[in-house]
Image (cartoon, rainbow, N blue to C red; front, side):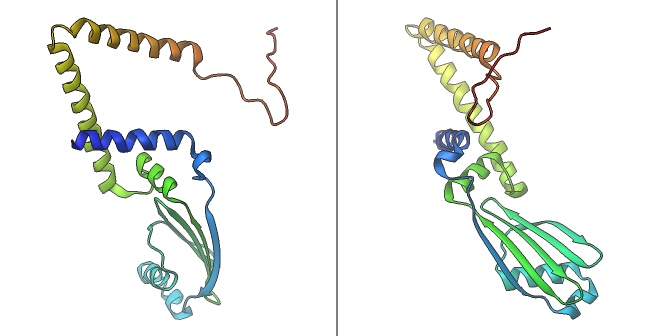
Length: 191
């Protein structure tokens, strides 16, 4: 049952990943805010305390992915499957600018499907899920082939399905070149 649940999740999210624009999963809600970081805190250049201050003050939940100590500013990035934060702090004044991009539920599920910004624990879940999917498929094949009256039909379906996928790959992948907006694709003859 767990294998079926995993297949259902990855099947649905496989479809939504392939058609993100249909589900508005590529359009974030963008918020830009400003605030203040204490100059005393910046003078110590204690990265951990600066990050803790940003999390508490601006309600940032993602994992820190970048912390740059540049000439006149600190730049800090945070990411999780549903949000991105880019923070810039002026060292001399403490002026803090926070750029946030929040994505919808479908985008979060798509990022979980990809394992993007989800951390090592989710990476293990994806690996374990892949094992359950393989196990569910393998037991299904064994059960199908173990039934004498259905063995020929099952083996034929497996063979024709495999050949069909290989033919699609050979003849239709990568597909035609995309034409620029408003133009029709033209094929140039070789020299």
